[in-house]
Amino acid sequence: MDFADSLTALAQKVRNQRDGILTEEATKNAFVMPFISTVLGYDVFDPLEVVPEFTADVGIKRGEKIDYAIMRDSEVQMLIECKSSTAPLKVEHASQLFRYFAVTNARVAVLTNGQVYHFFTDLDAPNRMDEKPFLVLDLLDIDETLIDEIKKLTKAAFDLDSIISAAGELKYIGQLKRTIAEQFRTPNDDWTRFFIGKVYDGAITQKVREQFTPLVTKASAQFLNDQVNDRLKAALRGGGYSEDDEAAVTSKDVAEEDLDRDTEIETTLEELEAYQIVKAIACSEVKPQRVTQRDSKSYFAILLDDNNRKPIARLHFNSRKQKYLGLMGADKSETRHPIGGSDEIYQFAGEIREAVNRYM
Image (cartoon, rainbow, N blue to C red; front, side, top):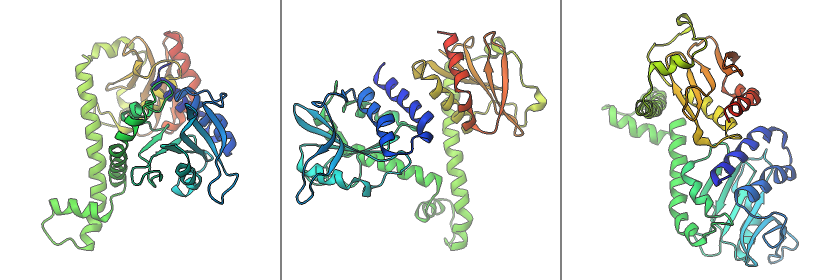
């Protein structure tokens, strides 16, 4: 299993189990130790590599412990502090990391709740841990641009100099991306005022701001949707998709009267979200790049190896009245299951994995 596959497999484990993991100790056992072992590649049972309950007296503080210290050549390289999976991560949770960072040789500190990992270093002042992370990894929303950077922390490819040299850029790019995403979701007054000034010539009064704020929010969402659709359409054109491909795998088309929207192909964000959920489930059996999608007028198809004879599932989301998840039987006949939203797809994880394994 390569590095990306290991991340994907752990992400699926977190997704499946997080609701039942309610304590810090359970979080460490279920999520954090597998991250150290299967993702970073360190032997959690070798105290020369991973020291649990690491102790280093700090001034008048005696006997305090950090959850894990990662060692290389008998020196502390990385400190990891864990919180319960039910707790959001805040800088206030990192008080022990701040103290230990200053009295050890560690240049990387990690604060995690098993799902989200905040990576810190000392960019602002030597031997003093920064208050803001240079890298944030969310296993349920993995930013693929960060995978190579995280890989530098693994036992096999540990490259501290490269990590530190890239940390400054990563820190600010990450913060900018999160800030931009937040503005697209809930624009503040400055963001709204900026765009109002680009399209409105009059005085920007309170009434004008109230009028334009929902418009800026709606325009932002539509812009993102258009960008996604443009990329998908380009990919479909490049893949040589045709109506004959659709006919080859159709066992039961959706009747035209069931369609509430335009007959032109329109890939929605909801379909893309559902596709990512099916893909995450299927990736416990195969590599992520093998799970692909094709949208059509009748349904959104999820395929193995981009092969229309290897359908994993179909999304029938065209009707506003009822959405269906189509699952394939051993004879490739389709059974449609009514669902209220994408989250309900997790209830069919077993059937999705069975569909994938039939083609193995």
